[in-house]
Structures are given as structure tokens and as C-alpha cells.
Length: 179
Image (cartoon, rainbow, N blue to C red):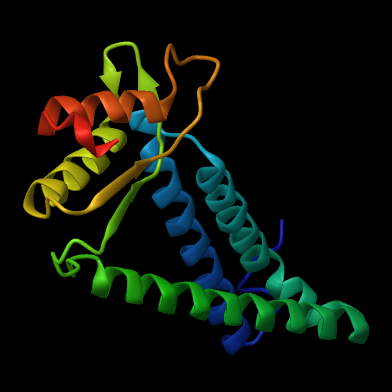
């Protein structure tokens, strides 16, 4: 195993530690949802990004100290691309967080789209229930708005996600005319 303190300058060690800590934080962030039973493509992507970041941190000193010049240039290019993508993701996330509580005007010209999520035997999953609660709350306040529910039927689901959401919205609003 490469010891970070043995073979590199201070800036390389700082970069290495930063990548390892960042990668570990990303891995932790995407492992936490596993405890609630949530595993999806986004989780896999988070695992890959976190793992690659940790590996970049571990191998940074070795690649900067005794790799061939071409390998170092490629590695630097990968780090730059990775950094640009990280800044983009952080910026995009910041915009989403900043605007997540901005409700649209209630003038009836809006359409609410509720994306599907897992349906269990006893009803919608926690994440789907939260989406439905937000949609039904908005639809109650803006009675002219339309609603589109989406989602397929997984092998472990007894009805499609869209059908479960439609039924839940009907129960919540008691307004069958919204189809």
C-alpha cells in the first residue's frame, strides 16, 4: 500500500487527503439510504463516484511521484475533468436547494407531475408517500391544476406505481374528475 506521507510533496498530500475524505463522505451519503431500503441507479452512481474518488486519493502520491510523464498528464487531465464535474454538480445542487421551496403561482395553468417510486403491499413507500403528500397538498390549494402520475410495475409490486398514486390521490382529494 502507498503511504501518502512517504513519497509526495505537501500539495500532493493535501490533494490526496482531500480526495480520500471527499470520497468517503460521498460513499457515506449514498450508504445511508440503504438502511431505509432504497437502492436505485442513483445509489449505484454515488457508490461509483465515491469509490473512484477514494481510489484517486489513494493513488495520487504514487502517480505524481514516480509515474511516467504521459501518465501524470493523463492523471492531471482526469483530475481537472473530475473537478469541473464536481463544481457543476455542486452548483446544480445549490440551485435545486435554493429553489425547492418556491411554489408556483396558483392560477390553474400548472401541471403537477408525480414521478413513480416503489409500491409495497401495504401501500406506497415512504418516498412515494412524501411525493404524493406534496402533490395532493398543492392540488388541494390549486383546484384548476392538472396532475400526471407516472411509474411502471416492478416484479415485486402488485400494481403499477401510477395506479397506486392515482388511487391515493383519489382518496386524498375525493375528486374523480381530475383523471
